[in-house]
Length: 220
Image (cartoon, rainbow, N blue to C red; front, side, top):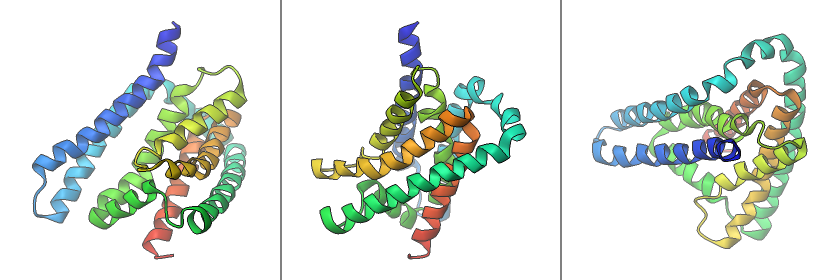
């Protein structure tokens, strides 16, 4: 029972990383000279990964929509408050790291900007919609029940979420970016823990990523 309890959420994470890498391996062999076609390929591949994650998690989240509709004002009011606090801490720590400590941007953000420049339509869909939904399912919903203590759940899943965004780091120094990502991850985890519903954190994650895209595309 304990093996299954731990194996399912971590197994889903491993599956997600395998599928995500497989997307680009397959893309390498089928990509064409057409930018539009390549964007279509990437969208289709990411939709397959998205569909698999949603299907495997459907028993966990499908019953929560009715509960969300009944309490959406209360849930979203709480979600906005927690996200705003997390965003402020993330923004401040990012400014300190980017301007004083490392004087650059995080490797994850750099990779996302490069992908946005190369495959804009795919990147926008993935960043603004698919990734937030999958990440909330993988890092929040699938870990429900694994931790008995609420604070342990909040900080453990928040840090795990942050660690995922450091996989492209090339030096130990860049691991400092776990701080701003953890600020956001902990905020999303607290939203889920206090509402016991996955949709508020999903919507705030979509909002956050969409806002980030708007800032990048606007050259701000």
